[in-house]
Amino acid sequence: MKNYVIALVFLVLAAGCSSVTVSYDYDKTADFNKYTTYNFDPNIESLGIQQLDKNRLKDAIDAEMGKRGYTKSDNPELVVDLEVKLQQQETATVTRTGGYYGYGWGSGGTANVNVNKYVDGTLFINVIDLAKKSVIWQGRGTKTLNENVGPEKREANIKSAVAAIYQKYPKQPAK
Image 1 (tube, rainbow, N blue to C red):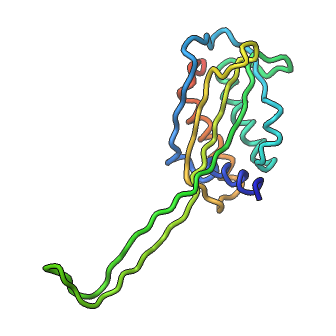
Image 2: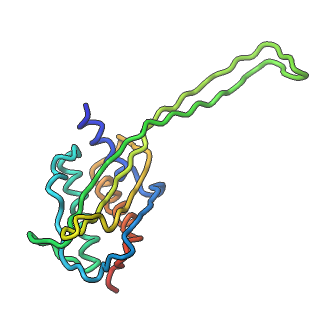
Image 3: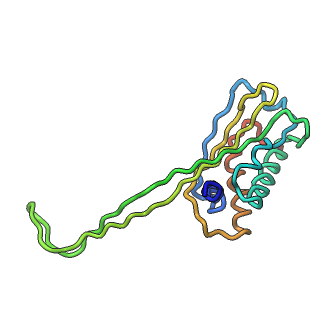
């Protein structure tokens, strides 16, 4: 069950990017231009995201890191790690129909309550300085999850979401 729930969080990226909320933080003392190599933390293989989406995510991150001049290496200076978090949400809407209300009294009518339950998922991309063993940048993308997404749209949206998260990376793509 836990792996199923964690795998659903990845749909935060696959559901569409127009409403992905992105934020970031970074170590202002880090010189992002001095780094040249990166690789993924091996622990992301046990993250609980289905393999196809994990591959799509890694490909999208590879593209963003490559645009910034980094090269993938078996002896990296930077390690990219991922985290996912879920938060159950619930909203309720009351709709009144019929009846007469006024002056503190009312008669007849009905009230319908519509409860909407959903899950917001957040993807964290952490870039770690391996020598310092500390996070130097973290990008976050949050969105309401949608289970009904096809593979083509999922791939396109993952690329777009990762690109949106990387927009505030301190080292911008080469022009």
